[in-house]
Length: 94
Image (cartoon, rainbow, N blue to C red):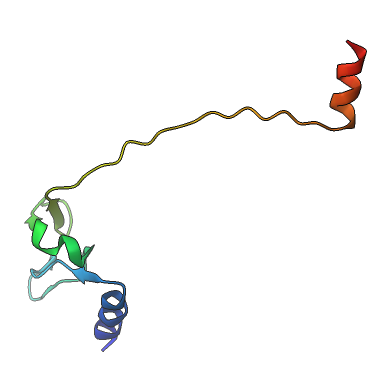
């Protein structure tokens, strides 16, 4: 019941769950308690795999998202002078 409510909220933001395999396997039970969510526009451009590491009772999920364009960040440094009574006094002393 709670899982359906969470999925409904995520779908309202165009986010979809990607894990359709068990992520926690124990002796008598299996469950998919870990998940990754992606935007619906990437749904066809992604593949998710389980990775069995043997270190934990939770398996790792590896998601490959194809055709991601990364934007280069441009940093501009702007110097702004603070003009106040103290800075004007310092200027006038010179």
